[in-house]
Image 1 (cartoon, rainbow, N blue to C red):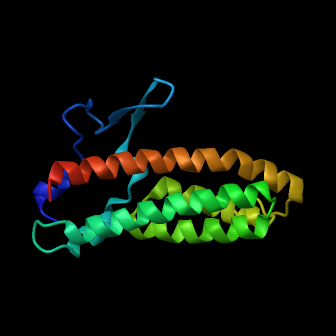
Image 2: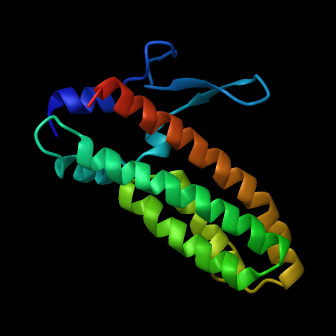
Image 3: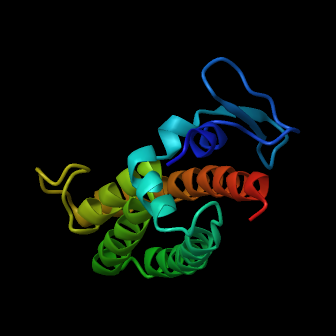
Length: 169
């Protein structure tokens, strides 16, 4: 990746505020402002590999991959909501596994990590997969993790959209 692209990855839109640690201000639905550190959201080594697949400075290919991911993630969240309503832990585990892989492929660290927890808990194991859980405990934990992963996804989505908007393919 060129120095220009590296700088762009660490910058934020003009209408947001940037501080020394390369953070971005975003506004939550409730009007609160939250500081987002892109380095907590994005694995730059992985995202860099995705950008390397683009032709020259044209990011159409990587952008199409990212847009496809957004569509998949939205559908997966809908499917997770349905599976949670049905108390279907095995489906929640499967969906967590699926979204974990997709998130890892484009470098979304927080989403990947939380999806891995959902995958493990859906298998009635603790977050790291080392101890057994009762079904009700697993459902309670996933009920708390699902809004968390959706919020992490939204943060990453906003950041990636701002990256590609700045790029103006």
